Image (cartoon, rainbow, N blue to C red):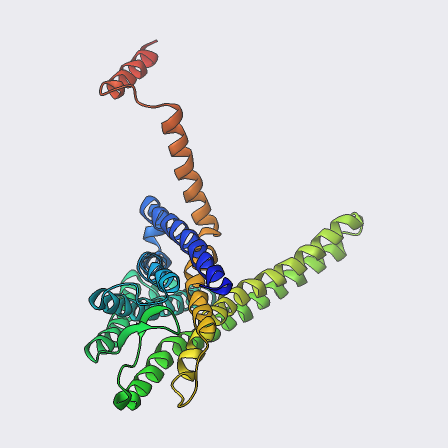
Length: 339
């Protein structure tokens, strides 16, 4: 291992820890909060977090061992299974992000008819489609024996073993990335740009009302006017920043890997091993950033985490004294009521 591979191995280790902890927190919030479970986006978020956890537990250690050993980390059977899951989970995560963007687009652009356009049943159908879509490509690659260890990516992944099947493998790879990455990217761009357009329209209306109010309030202190104007500017930047994070992180994390996989299909084109591992690590980093982009920084999840933390603190500060503790508590309460 050279210095670059050591740094990449450390990077995967850090990403795996952050991804596992953050995605487990998302699932904990989903299990604990009835409000999150009741809402439609919770289904997409749960599916995304489950995929990220499986990637963290199965695929990241495989790549880490591939870098350290500089060879196939497992036997053929295990490696083929990991490769199958990588194809399935990667496509599933992309389609889950696209589903989340569709949900937000309907919620913002059609708020009055959201409950009719995006029902719980519709969300389940979308999740089932993402599973079926991902399972189709992963099973095809497994049945055609296009799953193996790739030295370029230090991973068990899609890999061509026989040159006679290059044409079929090229068609499969192009169709797979077109219906997973490109389709999800187009949906993300369309939906979030529509959301941004509506957000800016509402910001503009709020700005007009604010400026009219400030114009009428002649005696208002100049510092108050400055704060109102500053808040207007922050409101505009906030909407643009969120949309940029959703679309930009998707492109930054997945595009280098997808472009590299398509480039290696060209004849007489070699891919540098270090760059192949870097592009793979970028896809892993998405699993660590998704919980913060889609869940943990939202007010609903913050409240759930605070509620869970308070319950744990109360349990530590006031532990039950034994099997009769609940009975003693009821007796004390009854005595208080009588007194």
